[in-house]
Length: 38
Image 1 (tube, helix red, strand yellow):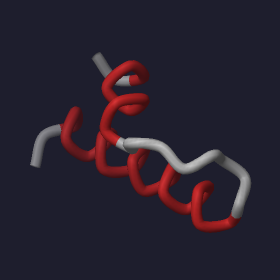
Image 2 (image 1 turned 135 degrees about the vertical axis):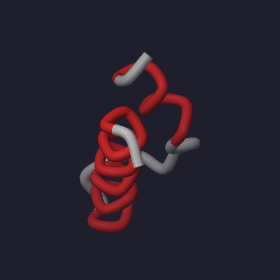
Image 3 (image 1 turned 90 degrees about the vertical axis):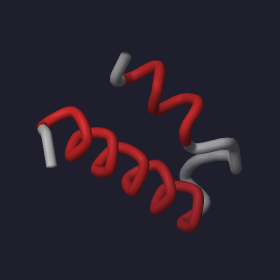
């Protein structure tokens, strides 16, 4: 797995955990993650 894929997985997992804990508003996880990791 390349570094970009690892970072994308890490960021999407972090956003999903934030949504599950109520820290973030539910959203399409891939969209904001694509903005963080273009």
